[in-house]
Length: 398
Image (cartoon, rainbow, N blue to C red):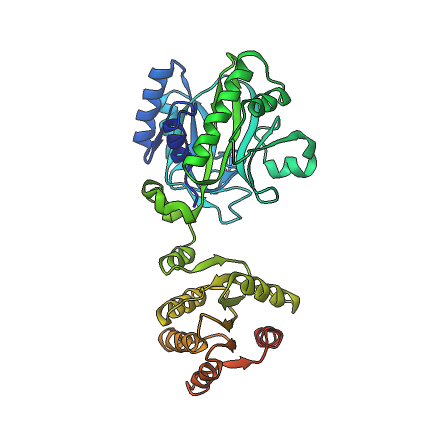
C-alpha cells in the first residue's frame, strides 16, 4: 500500500525523524492559511507548494492545463501560495511515472523553505537476495535511484542489517563517512538513519525512501521528501495506516479485487487471465507472451475460492476496455474445477460474453467441471493443456 508524502512525513514526525514544517491543503484558502502559519513559525518568507499524487518526478512533471508549471514550486508569501494552489488543484499533472494521462491533483503539501547545502539519497528496503533489511545511501540525491543504479552503481552505498543484533552504530557512521559527511552533519546523519530504520520496522514498511535527504548549512539533516510503502500482509496490525489509503490514487479494479481477497494486478495487454496459484498465473502470462500476445492482468483466485469469488473475478476481468479475450487456467488441487466452472457460468450469464473465452481445467472434479461448461450452452472453448489453451486464445483474439 502507498500513501502520500504528507502522510509519510506525519508518520516520520511521530517517530522522531526530522522533517520540515509542513501542512496539507485541499483548497487555495487552506494553502494560504498553511503558508502564513509556516512563515510565522519558521521566519522564512519562502514556502514550497508540492502536488500530492502517487507518482515520482513531480518536480520535473508538467500540468496539462498549465504547461509552464511543475508539480513542485517555491513561492514567496502566502498570497503566492494561494495563487499557485489555484492553478495546481484540480489540474492534471503528467510525470514520467504517471504516463501520458497524468493524475488529477486533489491535495497539496505546503512546506517551509529550507537553506540546502547538500542533497543525498537514503532508503530502507528488503534485499531479497540477502534476506535482510538493507539501507541504501547515495550522494546523488534528488535523482531517481534506478538511474543511479544503472549509470553509476558505485555511487550507491549499502548496509545490510543483521536481524539478530539490529543496526550497528558503526554502520550508520560508515555510511556517513562514505557520503563525505563530517562533524555535526555526520552525527546528525547517523542519528537520522537509526530513527528511520526504527520507523521502517515499527510500521511494517516494504520501502521507506527519503529523496532528497538534505543537509542544511547548519549541519542539520532533514527529510525533504518521503515515500512510504507498506506490506499489505501486515496492515491488520495497523488500522490507522489502512485509513490513509487514497482510493482516488489506486486502480479501481485492484481495489474491487481486494474486497474479494483476490490477487489482482492490471496490465497493458488484451488477454484476461484467471488462474489459481501465483506460479501458475506467472506461467500463464509467460506462455501468452510466447505465442505473441500480451496478458491484460495477473489474477490469482487462490486455492479456496468460492463460486461468488470466481464470479467477482470474472466481472473484474471483463471491465477492462482493452480486453479482447479471456483465458481461464485452473489446476484443481484444493480448488475444485466444478467450482470454477459454476463461477464462470454465473458470471457470463450475468454480464454477458463479448470476447472469446478459452477454459483449461485439470485436477479435482475436472470431468464434472468440463461437463458443466459443455451443458451450459455458452460459447466457451475448452483446451486440453496450457499450451493448447494459450494457442487457442491467441488465435481467436487475432
